[in-house]
Image (cartoon, rainbow, N blue to C red; front, side, top):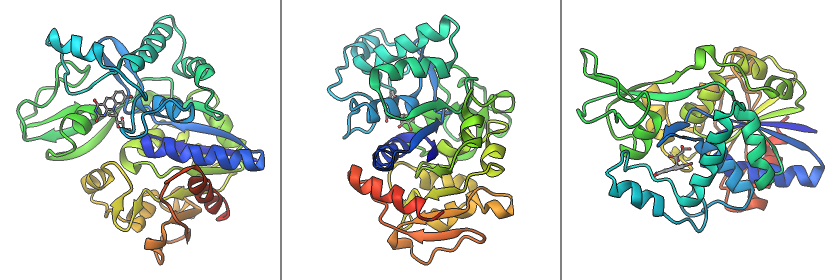
Length: 332
Ligand code: FO1
């Protein structure tokens, strides 16, 4: 059995722990197609938070409490940068984490595409799943905001746009997420570079050969949407041979973690299992889903044209997450 997972964020990385555990039980192969919209260039380094979350989480090196970055991290570089007054000071790179970015950036500068660089990094972490960035091309999520004059850090590439006549400007996703905790008037999300991006090598092939495609319980707006924004990728999912089953990131009207509620509000979508299911839509109706797994708290959720079932969706540990994956696959 071949399972392809569309994923991003910390919830997506934790979901993959369960997918890998399930796959080991049944002898399945797993390919994860990972969001790159959160990526940024910082202090000359290419940082790929979602790819790194998967590498560290599946490789046993993640800080479980913080959710991002390395366990047992130290912060000497961050302190030294602060002593120079180097911005941005609101985004911290740990010392161990910096080693990953140095290796990645060196390889990218030498001409290797991100997919090959990721494969190289994975030889250390042995994640046990095939890890593919959605695209090797630059694709960054930017957020159109207004209302705070200090917005748009010149320290972040492409975040220094001047305000238009309505006072709106674009900031990098990380500035919106980490610096402002999404608490600023927000108008829309833009996936910069998406129009000309191509799926990374192996992505379309993996989708064409899949027995099932799972959409992880990741943030639909800033983790899954940038993956689907790569031309050809949505088509390869929606028009592919494999059934598509999504797992709700919302339980009882609240995101399991993160700020999906704020992101959905920007789109005018209700923060509920039905709202997110409806956003993805039925494959039979031009959308993506054949099946939608919701939590017992959301039993009775209906998404027209989609088979909806419920199962416990709290990813408390690996066995619980593997049981969730089993329930999603039983929807097929
Ligand atoms: N999240 C924070 O809240 N504060 C940080 O300083 C921060 C630094 C950071 C560095 C590397 C990395 O891979 C992730 C980092 N994150 C940080 C997490 C990240 O902002 C987001 O949680 C993800 O992009 C969303 O998936």
